[in-house]
Amino acid sequence: MPSQPNWTWETADGKTYQNVVVTKIEADTVTITHSMGVAHIPINLLPRNIQTQLNYDPHAASQLSALFNGNLVSADGTAASAPGTSVQYYAIYYSAQWCPPCHAFTPVLVEWYKKFKSTHPNFELIFVSEDHNEASMLAYMKEMAMPWPAMRFSDLQHDGNGTFKGSGIEKFAGSGIPDLVLVDADGKVLSNSFTWTGSYLGPQHVLDDMEKLVIPGAP
Image (cartoon, rainbow, N blue to C red; front, side, top):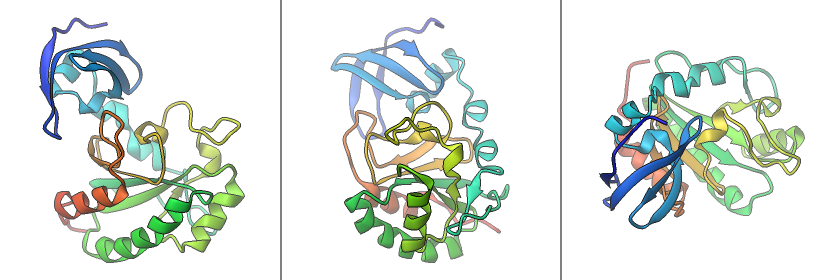
């Protein structure tokens, strides 16, 4: 592990942590100790100088275009085109048909997307299903008339219970759904339904942030 000193970290939500040390590094996440305990967080939330010391390259780590290319489907199950190079912001939506809170929030997200997408062609939303099978995922997409593409179910990594495992688009997922995460084209998390300590803020929090953070761009 690259050497790095204890440091003081003031996070984006205004918290200050003393004596922070990285104790374990994985593909895109780290385990840290600090004055208040232990946490497991995405590397790209750490201060940039610490990311550099840990040899973390967000451009290489995210590979969003590679994840999406050839792996997206529409609500009818047919292949969907990958977002173009003009897309600078992605909202990743983790949701499932079996989840009652998702059924309450998804119609809100659909109506919001229809209005927002028309004035923000540099933005795209990608649905990542946490359903237990592909049929449930496609039925949910049709039921909600989702206007955005989804990751093909067979390209997601699930265990026998439908829970995410491994790397890929799953790396942005929190511990529950509905979960909406805003990232830039390099995979940097700009807004999240969960705080880095695991507290749930909810997807509406991210919608509010997107209205402020996603700058309209040319088609």
